Image (cartoon, rainbow, N blue to C red; front, side):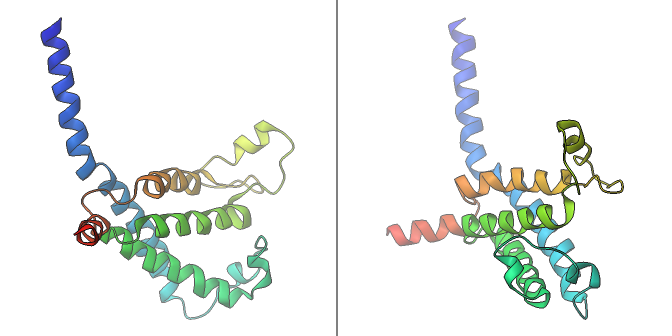
Length: 169
């Protein structure tokens, strides 16, 4: 039994050591792909603010700004945030900023038009929306994936780690 416990302890130590290098990297890379390559690059290619975006009712304080400003801001948060996630540079800041963008997207676009019961809210936890039911599943998963980056940063395989080591010297 003691040998089994020792083996387990050694395995856990090895996994934790490797995890500090690799656990956050796939999260950073998939979130960078989604925000930079898919969402941000798509917005950069648009010649003008699309009507579907201009017609959105954004939550306060974003409702104070014109649609063109919001389009510009969200585009560059997604593009710069995605690039910085790949590099692991200012990871906490960009992950938090992307969570804000995602919350605004959920509220303005993906939330059900009416919620009178838990069952009705649950209808919105889907990938494709039915009329009025919402589709907040993917954005919610993005928030859940970004949270470890806010709390733990980019991990050891990041420029944040390199900068922190340099500043300690």
